[in-house]
Length: 163
Image (tube, rainbow, N blue to C red; front, top):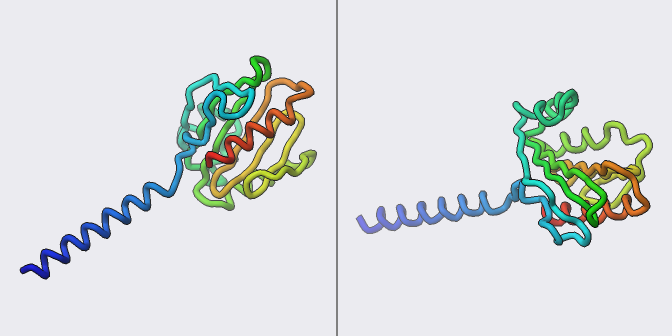
């Protein structure tokens, strides 16, 4: 009787440890957004919104299919403002597999400049796109100023650190 009881406790303990390890290792994409002041000059100006694959079209009208075919699981998005002037949106697309993030990143990188972010990244005049694991991050500024490229890069590093 005592041996059977000890086995129950051992199995229960193993299941608890395995469950805790499984939930503690992954961060949610919605946690990837730096708070106001976490990145110098940047203020988070909206709540984070989350769209799953089936309702992604509500956010990305006309281009959702590209992400769905690449295996998007969900997209989280939030708005930012740099020094009270430059507005930008950060999208974090969580893909089912790493190759989905790679596929989207490699689509249309013709005039992009490579940047060191995550596993791979590119920068344009008013945007930065990078992938890290199964996450694909797109940061887009709505205007161009002399500070835009460096400001976006700083925000991208802030997001990268939270993934």
